[in-house]
Length: 300
Length: 251
Ligand SMILES: Nc1ncnc2c1ncn2[C@@H]1O[C@H](COP(=O)(O)OP(=O)(O)OP(=O)(O)O)[C@@H](O)[C@H]1O
Ligand SMILES: [Mg+2]
Image (tube, rainbow over the protein chains, first blue to last red):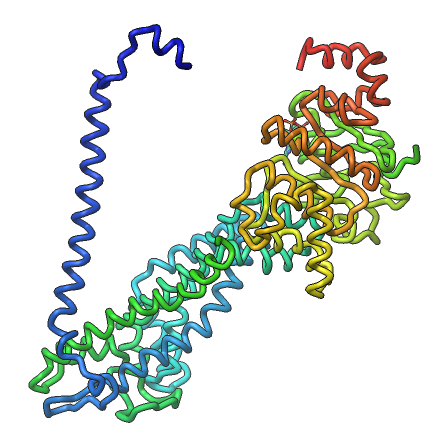
């Protein structure tokens, strides 16, 4: 429609008289309202969880040894174990998960067996974590007879991570537009070169998000750890021995809330909660920094 | 004119569907050959056989022979990566990588082992110049390739293809997503490039075929109906179906 017809004809561009405009408004309002509610809820939740613990936090609390009877124990060994177990489990599960995901996305033939594998991976990634804990017991406590150890806990945790990492990798790689793959192949690249230089870099955002989610969940995991790494620590700081018992922060939290007899159990739980939340948020930020730097490099 | 590509009795099947039927032709060196024909007649399919991009579509089967520079490209001793380095391709939709302009052009040379910064700089500059894009982007080579216009992106894709020093450039409707001015630029570019490269272009635009090409091939339902010098094909087609098509009576 050009200027001349518009000025000649007495068109009105006023309100539409149909009900769709009204629905549109109601729907927009609804979406906004729910969005704001959810955000308020999350912020409120964070506030409630952090308000009792965060102000009382001291550095001392983070690295001192817990006490069984008296007040003033810390969470040192449990916090250390959390990171130690997480690191080992990620070192095991990230390479395998990425490889499996890339295989499923790029190499796996289109047949019933692979479809079945895919269903299994999907199923496993939503199985309750305690199942992985029971599996860990069967493997490490009963079969290998090594008892409750950091090693057993970390490997069981890696099993828990694997299906999710595999799925997320497959999905992120599949989401890369086929045009980009074609462009790479048409320039004479091999399949491996295309994966390394196009598919993985383009999918990186999704991959990092996936690893963050997995790491965050693994950091807060308790059922698997209780069953495979136990609810005690070796009682000293910086214990790298893979065969020590491996209580983590999340397990310690559960332990002080429900079992401990120290008088300040409540306070320890609150402080440990805020540490746990803080670290999970931190994991998400830290993993994203390289992405952010990378996008700044090419976009500017 | 010497033929660089010889296609001999080529049949191509997608599963049970035969997309190309007994196609034979010669494509002359350092000239532009245009493929025309209605949608679905097999133009893209034939183009993709020339750099074996069809290999990636499961269920394709090929009979017959294609020789590039005298070598049967479907014989066992041909490495498909080497073939694609020699036979470059530009797609219908501009498809730059989400990397910088520089890294897009340097992608191919890096794949094939060029490492030196100075050497890469030279290749990037000469390829962008050859694609008539250098002046527009020389001051922001580090910018994302996605931040330039569609027409510029398509010329970037041409530069990227040229950077690996191909002999043949396949262009599958490379201008159909572009505005008339960008289209004209790419046509002019093709005219310049034909002195050094053998170009095969698929186009739906009959005027484009008539304007730029030296030889035109008309396809119908997977068969080559007619191919000859462009001038002859458009002024004096020997087949009734060609005449109907170019005069717009069907298709
Ligand atoms: N991957 C594929 N699998 C099965 N059939 C295909 C595939 N690609 C193309 N075809 C079929 O092969 C025939 C030729 O397709 P092609 O893409 O070569 O046509 P085209 O001439 O390039 O058409 P257009 O001008 O629309 O691009 C069509 O009938 C198409 O349906
Ligand atoms: Mg096509």
